[in-house]
Image (cartoon, rainbow, N blue to C red; front, side):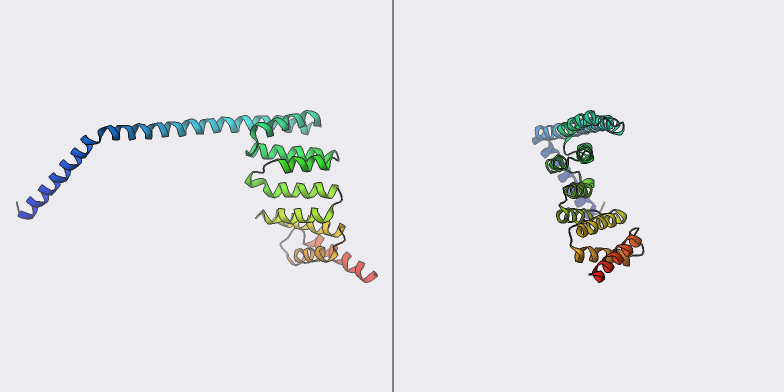
Length: 218
């Protein structure tokens, strides 16, 4: 055996002995650390199971409310939706319940109640654009068209889905038109008209023609 091999073997033995000495000296702490890791893992499993049960319960309650809503039983639907919001507010189910409750109020012509529900509620990330659009619908119902247009434009800025973005911008243009802001309406319609991929291009060209005809007649 060469001197190098002897030296390497001795160094390895020294490191192994040092590691064993460290383990013996710190055995209690290693045991505690292992126990903590095990507890954390068990806690993570428990939390995941709880979250799964909560999500399932929320979805079940929301589905019952949807069924009542679809059947036209608005009083029962509203009661069920409020329960979902109270218990699961901030969750995807709570967000959906908030929008459905607001929509129910709007369908009854109760714009203020619908807007309050949206203002008090919390939108899940995927529902933020729809929240803003519903606020726009509520403001339109109150004939507050300029504010409604801004809510629709905000909704467009919160989605990357093209057809939804274009729809919200078209809603904003209509609301600006109703508010008497023909200039802002024309800007939006012009952008949509030039986008051949937009599902609202044809309507935009018609609206632009109407705005132009109105301007000429004056």
